[in-house]
Length: 178
Image (cartoon, rainbow, N blue to C red; front, side, top):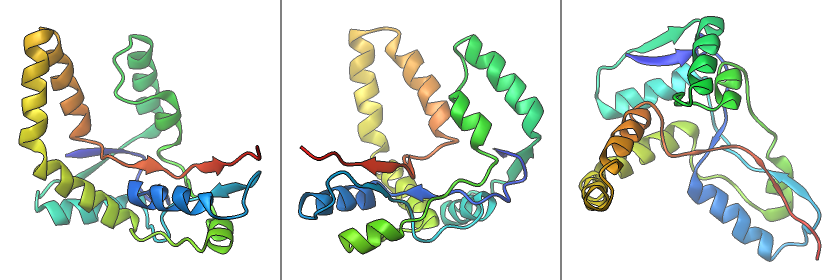
C-alpha cells in the first residue's frame, strides 16, 4: 500500500528537472530581469491519477491508501518534533490541497514549454532510479566503510524514497536585475 494524505482528488503540479533547467537556460537570453516566472508541468491530473500512472508503469500491483488528513498531520507533527518525520511540515500540511501555478508568463516571455507531464516525470524518475540502483548501493557501501552510521542513514533515506520520487514542486523563479 502507498499512503496518500486525503483521497488524492486534489490537483498537484510537479516539474521535471529537465524542464526546470530548460526554463532557467532560456532566461539567460531573454529580457526577463526582475520578472517572477512560474514553471511547472503543463499537463497534470489528480494526485491519485498521477500516482496510479506510476503504479501501472512499474507493474507493481500496489494500491493507493488514502489516509485521513487530520490524524496524519498530528502524527507527522509529533514525528517532526522528535526529528523522525519523513516529511517537512509544508509537505504534510499541503499535500492534500490543490497546488498549481499558471505557466503562461514563462511560455510567453521565454517561448518555454514543459516537455513532461506529472505522470511522465514520475515514470522517468522511477526508471532512472532502477537504472542507477547498483551505483547508489555501491556509494552507500563505500560511505559505510568510512562512517559506520552511514548505512543506517542510507537505509532510512531508502525507506523514504520508496514512497517519494525525485522531482521538484512547481515554484516561482525570481530573477533580479543587476
